[in-house]
Length: 320
Image 1: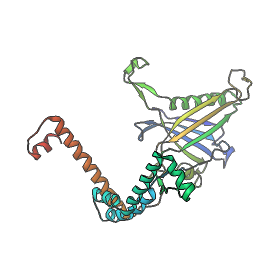
Image 2 (image 1 turned 60 degrees about the horizontal axis):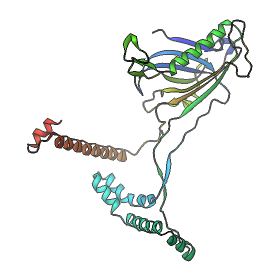
Image 3 (image 1 turned 90 degrees about the horizontal axis):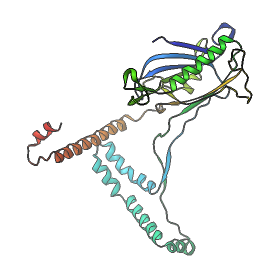
Image 4 (image 1 turned 180 degrees about the vertical axis):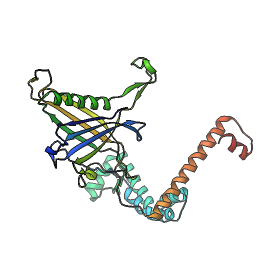
């Protein structure tokens, strides 16, 4: 498929605009949620005002008794670093003094819930409040970053009007799904699937190449130093943004506003490294969890099969 190249304004990358920075938006066929195929288009647009913004969010939650569990975790951490198993680590936490203290607090809160006057008596009579032992616990990332760009096009002639029309059309094709699964008869009633829309990768550019200050800040790479894919989650087009329908003689709008919202398909991860000993232990723990899950699945399939007596080797081979 031929690569589509578009730009606005038409003089964007000419010597008349020397030194001007612009936004390069490349689209790719999507193979799945993360992998991309062939490049389909490359669109160069001016950088709209107030669009070079970026933010990062962290997901924390205040949890009851978490402070005590964190204290108990120091003993578990020693087992963890020493290659201890899951059962030993859990036992170290559950059997600690801190967790027993948490149980006392929990029992007191339960009693207060059953008898609200007890809480009033503690507060008003003794000046006491139950300690929830709360701590702020990290929950891991839970949202993918978004970038919104608001463009305004003012085509002054037929070539610019056609360029704007083609840009709108390409973004529209790239963000919408396609029917799949019914060959040439693909349609609403005959197609069993929707094919995922395109992936996008963006760069902050100038005539001399990639902007070394803004490009990585706006569009960081993943752990493999590859550009992170984006998808378009919203596209809004307004052909009469001033509330008055204004058209050129050929019918092209005098002004067109387009808003695009892109969302990243991967989390942005810190460049800080994890201690190698901890990393090794984490991998061992993950393997223990996976081995236990595999064993439970194996035992479930044996029970479902109805086989009651046989050698372990036979069962292993039968349900591998």
